[in-house]
Amino acid sequence: MTNNRRTGAKCSTSTKRKHEEERFGPPFGIMEGDRDMYRQFQDWCLRTYGDSGKTKTVTRKKYDRIVQLLNGSESSSTDNAKFKFWVKSKGFQLGLPEDISGGEKQVLYVPVKTTVSNTCLLF
Image (tube, rainbow, N blue to C red):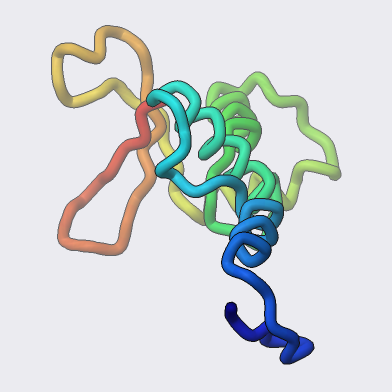
């Protein structure tokens, strides 16, 4: 038995685990296979971070929009002026990968404030 932090009432370990699973999802130990783990992690990321403008996470939707903007295929409007400014201020760039195995597919380079000059995200 453990104490509930809010009410001070005692609850069993199984009840506590049930509440944690409802809030955070099942623990990693009971997931079946890498594919299920990936799906559950991806679902958790989307629920937790979503497309919130407050996070530093670049979601798939935001990534696609950045690539469209850098390729010049996103239309100009006052609605996306703030987004364009954000992309330019972060210094996102499209370029060919440094290694030969990447082929002709462009990657999104994201400058970071470290001793390394560029870091890239491969999707």
